[in-house]
Image 1 (cartoon, rainbow, N blue to C red):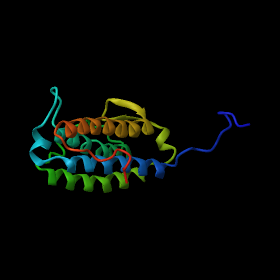
Image 2 (tube, rainbow, N blue to C red):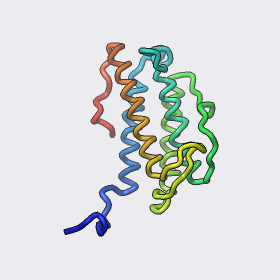
Image 3 (cartoon, rainbow, N blue to C red):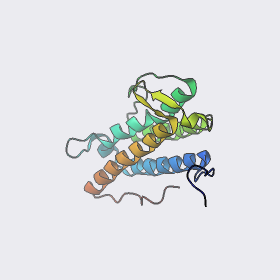
Image 4 (cartoon, rainbow, N blue to C red):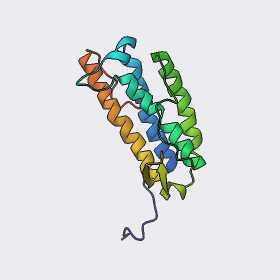
Length: 163
């Protein structure tokens, strides 16, 4: 019988975690693409931001944060870095950021995932927890996008079709 103290096998590799994250990103990209241009930038419910703003937030976190982790840069978060004005620009930048995320994620060593890092100078957690936050935050905002699409009478992509 194996106890927690003696268990050495992991349930997920770092490459599997990256694939899972990129699956979420693929689905979120499809949600962005499902919006009509005008509604992507203007439609909101209950005082929430338009989905374009949520997508821009996601664009300003993933690749930027991973680069900060690799370079030990703790600069504050800013939405000023990436500010697309059209759906086409969001989708193009989304595709570019996929490469950035892949590039920096693969530079994080197994040991580094366990190290505490002060992300954006204010979120001091182990690296793996910061990455899980990126994924959780994306799922949260994508769900808001689903609500918007349904309110607009648009069927959103199936949430289980991530790849």
